[in-house]
Amino acid sequence: MRTVHIDASTKYDVLIGEGLLDRCGELSAKVIKPCKCVLVSDDTVDELYGDRAQISLSYAGFEVKRFTFPAGEGSKHLGTLSNLLEYMARERMTRTDVVVALGGGVTGDMAGFAAAVYARGIRFVQIPTTLLAAVDSSVGGKTAVDLKAGKNLAGAFHQPSLVITDTDVIRDLPADQLACGAAEVIKYGVLYDEALFAQLEKGDWQDDMDGIVEKCVQWKRDVVAGDEFDTGARAFLNLGHTFGHAIEQCSGLSVSHGQGVAIGMLMAACAAGCPDDMVLRLAKCVAANGLKTHCDYPADKLAAAALSDKKRAGGSIALVLPERIGKCYLKKIPVTELKDWFDRAIERMEALGV
Ligand code: GLY
Image 1 (cartoon, protein in one colour):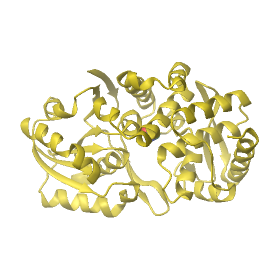
Image 2 (cartoon, rainbow, N blue to C red; image 1 turned 180 degrees about the horizontal axis):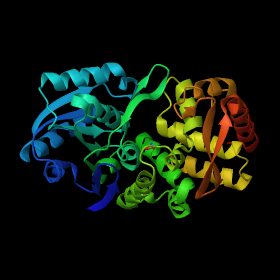
Image 3 (cartoon, helix red, strand yellow; image 1 turned 45 degrees about the vertical axis):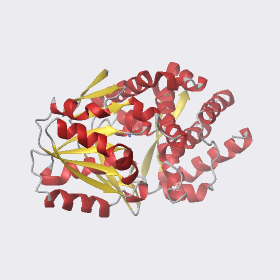
Image 4 (cartoon, protein in one colour; image 1 turned 180 degrees about the vertical axis):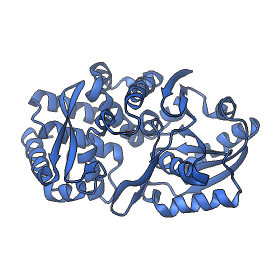
């Protein structure tokens, strides 16, 4: 088992290894005295892994209550959050109890937000079951739900007390879900780590799942240690997100987050004027990991969708732009220029045939 220690306002470990789901109770009990816990998952994950998590937690002494909701980003709204909070209240959970988020980013974000606000804040444990959640959203304490006007518009910073990633579960993911997570791994490569990028380019990285997850979590640890509350360098983690969120919004959320980020990174590279060979290398890596490279939406619709992005600050927005593989920079632009950036990205992608 690998351990990455996160040094944030709450200090905690991210445990990474095979077979950890069946040990989640024992591992949680080392940091949280057994108490009442609400095990939150969507109906798909609940059917696959809910019983195993419950057995392990119960065996370790936790009194387990289960809350499930329909799978999908469409459930990440105030209505589901409200149902969860009311459920916790009906089960008479108190400040000393715990929320356990078993699932992907939607579950982690929503259960984490419930933990952040229930009784003014209770502890929570993340058990990510997607690669995307394992390498990004389960670590660093960002919790949220979507509003009609945009993704993640209502949320809070609330660090988990423990993150448990069972890499057997990640390896078992369907190909499209693994591809979504691969987009976030490619993102760390483009941001910080050319060697990691090269591993993803080769496509044999799944044999080294524990190492890949650990490497990404170590990058995330460094970012969170430097800027927990997202007022500075944490913004780099938004590489591909301004463009990608706009694609997700335009698709009515039928394009997944990872897919949106993958195309978004390509758009960022194109709009930033990166050399052709670098853009084509990035496109090849994205495609090699089962992700589309083509953007189906026009610049004016994308720019309108991007205006609801919470990364916008008043009249400006900070874009994360690649300089080369392994190095990016931030560029603040007036929101009135957004459409030009989308135009430039789309024209260049068309010219390069990606
Ligand atoms: N997912 C981006 C961040 O944690 O800041």
